Image (cartoon, rainbow, N blue to C red):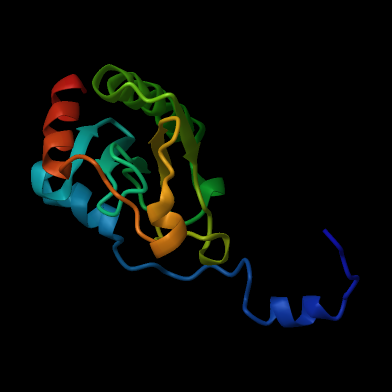
Length: 163
């Protein structure tokens, strides 16, 4: 990769207000949490400080998200207790996915901020994506389409029993 030094670009980048916090309206995660209609909202499990929800637009079958109960768009606002429960929830979720779906591996991570790729940037959340050898085929390459192999309601019901 070639790099070109361009210090004048920092003025342009900073003009977007990077790092400035804005007051967020209630996120879709907060709405799902408060609704208490877990099946409709695909909420699988509720902890003291975070909850586990299925991704309505999954990258793969079994794509889950761990969301703090408390809405914040900044990962640096999370408390040590919230961070600990998030990691314990990741283990719990992967154990359930191992039992139900037998993936060969996982992607686990997050995008913090719209510029970093967060589709929902007003409420921090962490993705768990089960992966299988050969799970990428010609569909996403040729037609920008991902095939999801199991109905989400079936996945929700089966995971809910394990969690």
